[in-house]
Amino acid sequence: MELFQPNLPWERSLWGFGFELSNLELLEACDALRLGHLSEASLRNLLSTIKAQIGPDPALENRQKQTLQDRLKEPPRSGGEAYHSIRQLTESIASTYVLQWAHVVSNGTNKPYQPERFAKSVAAFILDKGFSSAFVFNEWFKPYLTNETVTIALPNFLEELHRLVAANPSRNFEVLVAFQRTPSVRPPGWLTPAQVITWLTEQHHSISGVRPSGGMLLEVEARDPYAAAEAARTILRRYSARAELGAKDPINLLNELWVKDFPTVHPLNHAPRGVRVEALSREQQIFSKESETPIGRRVDAAIELLAHMEDKSPAAAIAGGWGAIEGLLADPSNRSSAAEYLAPLVACSLPRAELTALSYKIQKEHPELISELPGCTVNRERALMVARAIANGNPMPLRRDADQAAIRRIQRILSNPTPELKAIRELIASAFQRLYRQRNLILHGGFTSSIALAGSLRTASKLAGAGMDRIVHGLYVNNVEPLELVARANLGIDLIDPNHPERCVDLLGA
Image (cartoon, rainbow, N blue to C red; front, side, top):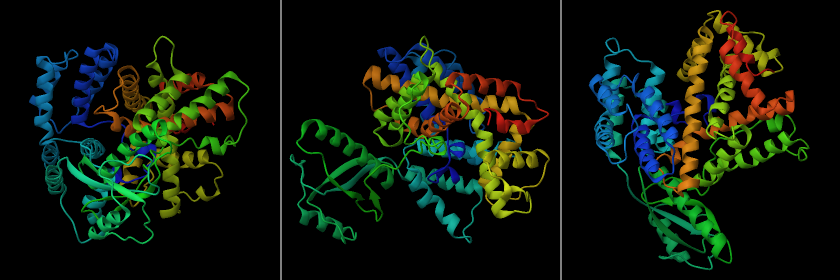
């Protein structure tokens, strides 16, 4: 359930796509290769990621895996037999994917599975369908959290999820947009102020403080009302861009959106995507002067570009975000290498991020477990104390399942650091490679409606912020340039001493 909660930290969020969207992205990439918008190397990278994802997925039957693997030996030709076979088989499996997980869970002894893989596979599958996390959490999961008398066995819950997904297909929603000031060019279907108030009253919304100059109704296609509001925001961004270029005045709207037949009032602005570079604040760089060094100026430019990932339109966010990464890290002869260089910085940051968060949970819930925690002045000390306690097998009876899952992740890293960190690095690199593919579709093909566009931002934005945070910290605290820090990260992953696993806290230095 945590995976659907808002404001998850980057280390606990979803980094990848689920089964269905991964395959559909591959087919779209095959079409883009035919049109010259993606390279064959980029397509092969995606193909490798998908094959690695399919192999260990316990929800897929062996015959389904084998059939897919047979079609994935080489990049499918757009419109070819393998291309259509993958599409048809993907659609068939997706129609019962959650039910297949229910079968796995109910037969766990015969078909073992990792609970974390299960949770991430199902969560990604649902979000990839176009459901908003707020809708799933508030409407489907919250009743089980707020009412302790409501219980359900996990296989039965998955059967219910399957039913809910099927019962909420993509459909049309009507969204009311109210203007604060009448635009110089009125949209079709313009509503007078009285008509706006009448619509709100008939929908049983409060009209207290609502002072529109007029309005319009947008018809959008979405899976749920929250997603409908997000679709309306995307349309309004497009209208605003047109108005900035072609009208006398910008579009001025009230700060709310209303979806017909749904009681929740939605904010006009997009929710932030969670791109955080907190080293700028910690190191007093918010109001610093422009750097006098070439690398400092490049980092300044990268931060400015990365800011687009937080709240700009999807196309601008991806173009700006990748521009920030490429400008700092890419090899001139291989632009995609920036994805492989940023990934180890994020991977090496994960142990300390998880351990620091756990330290505060331990201090709050069980202060007796590590009594020295309140005296720690820096997060590194806190993380080291928790790492040593976990490595020594000390019990950590934290209340939330999500925290127990984090402890298990850290246990795996501490017991087998290099292989585990390499696997994390690969997952993160895949998210950045996806961002790079989307950037190419946008800038080379002018394609802003990719099936993977929204998901790419959902999976990569927080990771990009975490990586840039390490770059800023490395430069302003340790005077280490970005690629030098990348080298340190990769060596740290390769050479960490398994006899001293707590050193995973210091993979990037202080």
